Length: 398
Figure 1 (tube, rainbow, N blue to C red):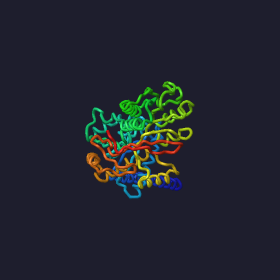
Figure 2 (figure 1 turned 30 degrees about the vertical axis):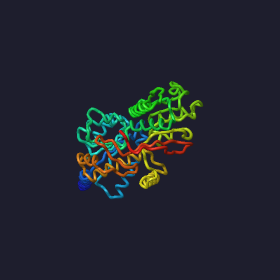
Figure 3 (figure 1 turned 90 degrees about the vertical axis):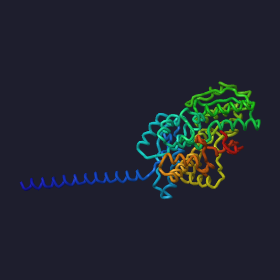
Figure 4 (figure 1 turned 60 degrees about the vertical axis):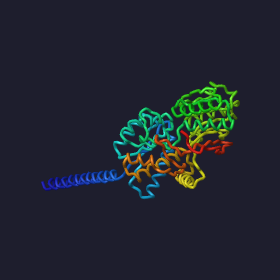
């Protein structure tokens, strides 16, 4: 009986100890949640949209790297009042909208940086503007976003990347002014970005006396490009104007260079040629390749500091234009929150009236439709593997 009583007493003590341990864990969890909740309430979030998975993951990687550099600056400044919340859009418009809505339901976030993809932005823009959210796209350069039926002046949508019609016209004017091309074979991917840019180019090129063969459209998931090139004449023109996303643009460029009849022909394109993904997919040295891109003064002290920090953080890699534009977009968003507070309406008004933000990509200021009006467009080219700048416009002309 004594042994049994002692055994029961020991079991009771063990049971009490277990329950005490569980109680301590519950209390600790509740305290952690309360503290975390308090931090969440005291912190203003900036949501960053990035296609970290899916077919556009390479672009998302550059966006994520820009975020890491900006976060390091926040930590160095001991700024815990602002938190960047990255959301994976998977490169899919429906996913982008659903994940953005879910993120906004979780965090207090008066401003969203993204999307870089026009198709994603077109999917979520109307409901976001209706709820008063500020959208600062680090891309979404489709010019038709400017004239969507629900858009109006000072509605809260901004982009620090020149619209595609600006790039398209800049290339057409350069080619005709220099008489570098009079007749071109034109291809573009079946994508809103590529289509809008080519439409602007073709119209301006023809207005200036140029002739166009095509345009011919191909699918973005194409893997065999020689049959596509054969759909248009391979002779009787001055070169190719091809616009697509980095993977398919690299495929088209490689196919042109593999063909003995077109191997030395000039290829004209747009900003995808400046991405790290495009360069990694090209076979051989880049040569006789011309492209338009947002102008970045890579000789400036601010860009030099950014590039060195990027190289140090990412094993000697150099940043591409996506990382640079995203870096500035995040810094603009942070400056807006610091100045106007965690309030979307005040942030919106600040962005419309702010003096030109001096970033690593140059000054950024917006018009009443949120388009950047201070970002020049550069005409750049590769010659025997070396990247050079041919000309840049003085400012964006919408």
